[in-house]
Image (cartoon, rainbow, N blue to C red; front, side):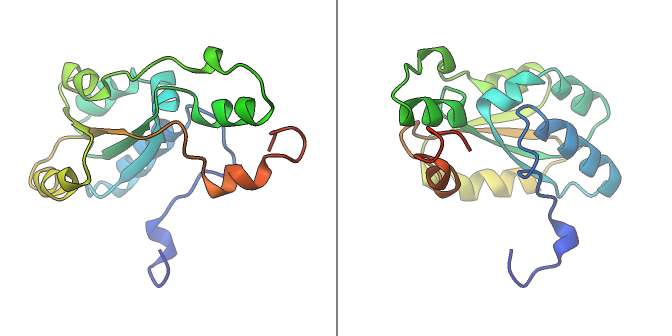
Length: 157
């Protein structure tokens, strides 16, 4: 993002409440009305407000929703594991978010290989419908931000 106009980015990670990403992205997409809004979201967070995909379709908003799907509440499992606590309550499995998007009349794709991104983006740019990319990621990779907070205060941020 360096060297680019700051008004092109709306980072909400400072608040960090699970489930708010889709609502904020919808607001930005409605305000900009140019089809150039990308939301990076976790699977558990999107599932908190999955019904908003209906509203996105009904109002014909165009977004690209990139869901990092680790089959769990990612931040929670990393904190639990750091504290040596059983993480099974935070794991729910890999929901097929691409199929759910299609059920709402949107476009969806399951992404399991890096080579899929270029053709998927070209196809997304050429059409006018919101698309959900269900990107499979490992639940064992901890972000640097989360890693910095671990070990201090027993895994809490």
